[in-house]
Each structure stands twice: as C-alpha cells, then as structure tokens.
Length: 340
Image (cartoon, rainbow, N blue to C red):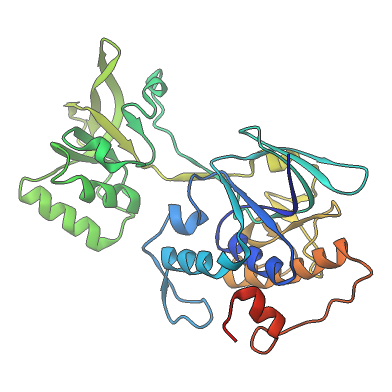
C-alpha cells in the first residue's frame, strides 16, 4: 500500500505542473497515467507540433514543453505509475481515499486530482476478427523497440504524424516499408508526406491508398494482409510486422463510474478550488467543466495552482498559508535547489 498526500491522475502538462504547485506547498504526489509514457497528448499525439500560447515561449515544441516540465518538477521527486488506470476509488471514514489501479497497485491518499486531459487514451484498433492474437507479436500500436522491426517486411497503417514519422524511420532499416492510408488526404505534417513520397519515387518505400480488409496466416503466423485500394483493386501484401497508427481514442473510462457530477463527458468543478462534487477530489485541465471553461494548457496551469492551495487548506485547516514568491522566498529557493 502506497501512502501519499496526493494522487494525480494524468501525466500530461497539467498533471506535471500540478506536481510543481503541490511541491511548493510541501505536498508529495504520485502520478498515474494510462499511457506508457509521460506527456499525455503532447507526447503521444503531436510531439513535434509547435505551441504558441505558453507564456514566455514565443514557440515551444510539445515534447520540449513536456521535457521542461519534467525538469521543473525534479526537486519534488514525484513517482510515476504508467500504463495503468485507476479502477477503484473508495472514500474512507477519515476522509482519505483508497485507490486501486488496473495493475493492482494500491494507494491511500488524502486527496485526488484528476488531470486526465479528455480522458484515458486508447489506440484505435485495426478491427479484423481474430487479428488481436498477434498483438505485440506481429501487430503493434506503439513502437517500443525500433530494432525489433529491423530487417522485416513492415506495413504501416495510417495517415497522421505517428504513421508518417515511423514509416520514415523504418526506411533503410526494415527490408520493405509500405504505408497504407485510406485516402490521398493526409493529416500528417506536409513536409513528412513530401519526404515519404520522395522515397516512394526513389523506389525505397511503397505507398498504397486503400483499406485493410483481411489478412492471411500460416501455422500461427501472420503472413499477409489484404488491401482494397481506393480504385477497388485488391492487393495481397506479404508482411512480417504491421504498425497500426489510426490515432488514439479518448475515453473517460472508469472515472465515469466514480459518482462525480458530469457535464456531458467533463467533470463539473467549482472555480475557487476546482473541487468536484466529491470533497477531496479535484479536476484540472481539459477534463473539467465550469462556466466559461476554455480548453487551454495555460488555463490548466492556473487551475492547478488554485487546486494546490485548496488541498493544502483541506489537509491543514488550522495552518495559515502564506503566499510566497519563488523570486524572493528563501524557503522556496531551498525547495527548488536554487544556490544561495
């Protein structure tokens, strides 16, 4: 059983900055995320996309923002629990919460902050009957170890940034690379699309416009996939590995069963504490709702700061909480490791 002051559900930018705000108030946090990596949408959906509305940064890459936030919270030594969802939440008689994740990890925490963006992200699956038995063997929705695909006949499915980025990465490493997309309209960065088409023209890769509608197998191995082109011509492609990047689907998931008041698929909060309808459970970032809500990262940062002060008051109601500034406070400098 892990004992902590606060459990943060969500390791995107708002969840990361929440660690910082809590740390300044001497509150320790554990962070849980359904994704296997830190960074939420910024890391998984658009790591190379520029963001223009972060104060102090005329432009900053999404993944760069995540890296800077991770660096910023290092003084507070948060613990991350990735690749798991909170499945059970039970409020105890003393007001604390007992949480259990999908991997069986258990927490006892004094407060919970939901910073889950628009929910837990799950990959959109390539839905062909029986194909799931090849998951993480020959069918992959994430690339964990690029060397695994070296020398293989690789088919990449999708037309977004992840599909194009990995198709480009595989050229020259895999024995064959074929990109399959359902139309000539790509959602990826135009530069990536142009670069891949240049490789196709040079005979170093293949591009097939159409949909995967079937597959072939021999002795328990995936050996081919069947593609119907946009011209209705049928193709059978020999394959060793399929990398499917159809995007990620946000789902509120088990949070929908926590008994919180919802507004459609968002969690209602107040604007003083960003507390939900359950005292001790807070929500910041895109997952919350209140009148005038704007789904901006900078709004989530503001919400996280106020939520941290509210939690500090919740846990220490008789303690006077003085607002201190990181520019001048020597105690803040000590927490952050700023040299004297």
